[in-house]
Amino acid sequence: MESYYNCLSVKADNFLWLLQDKALEITGEAIEEIEQGFIVRTEADIKPIKLQLIAYAKELETIMSDSINLEFSEETLKNQDWIASYRKSITPIECGKYYIHPSWFEGKKNKINVIIDPALAFGSGHHESTFGCLEALENLEHTFQEIELRNKEKENSKNWSNALKDKIILDVGCGSGILSICAKKNGAKVWACDTDELAIEATKDNMVKNNVLLDKVFLGSLHTIPTQKGKFDIILANILTDVIVALPLESYVKQKGYLILSGILEQYIPKVLNKIKNFKIVSQKINNEWATLVLQNKG
Image (cartoon, rainbow, N blue to C red; front, side, top):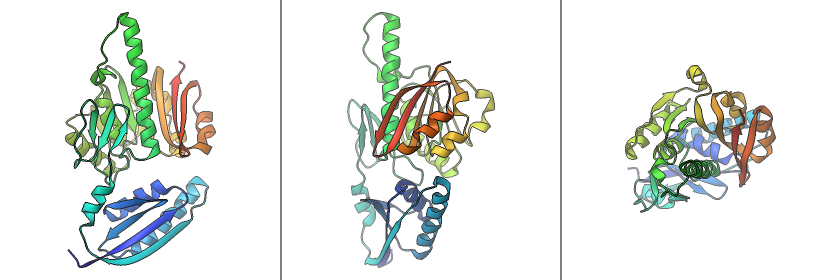
């Protein structure tokens, strides 16, 4: 270990999580979240990192038709065990019955424990869009259980491990695999895909950590599975608005099936709803300007 390391603080007024994700991809280093920004600590030269973040911000401005103001500060500090400090800064997330925690935390009794270590692939549960998807998934699980109880015409104890039994789910842009793993732990048959090889690797690693086996994990997107149109009970897509609009997600949902969509800034909700026809709005929740939509195929 070198005696000193470089510290790059980055602040942004827009698309912070995307810039943070890019910093992880560029450096392969642990980063620390701060208010309106993040810190990269590395023994490498930080000038190339800074230049790549600036270039990426310009690309985002073009894609999203919105501006990004970046602020940087740099310093060189005496080395310490900052990985241990970083670990202390990562806290578990509790969302209903789900308890999402890194591997250095113990699980909780009477919760569905999901181990996700922060890594290059997006999705540790901390971001509003991921949290929103978890909430939406749990609400649908309640809906399915209520239907099952009515069909049986008798009370029954709730068995969370079977809340999604016989449901076929596709997680588009699976990232770390957090949503896929949660669904699998509730009895669903789960397919997961991503166009990023790092995400696929992370999903497979997290399957092992959580002792689950997803039914299909593949590199690619909907064009890879054209024969599965109209086959899925639920499609999860926590991805950028422009990608949601570009993909024919609705054609892969069964009649009366559901779309859970997030990664959508509040201002782009009309853009999404205008594209997805013949679906009714089940719920629409905003969390710090990030929207999560649950839509049902009217058939």
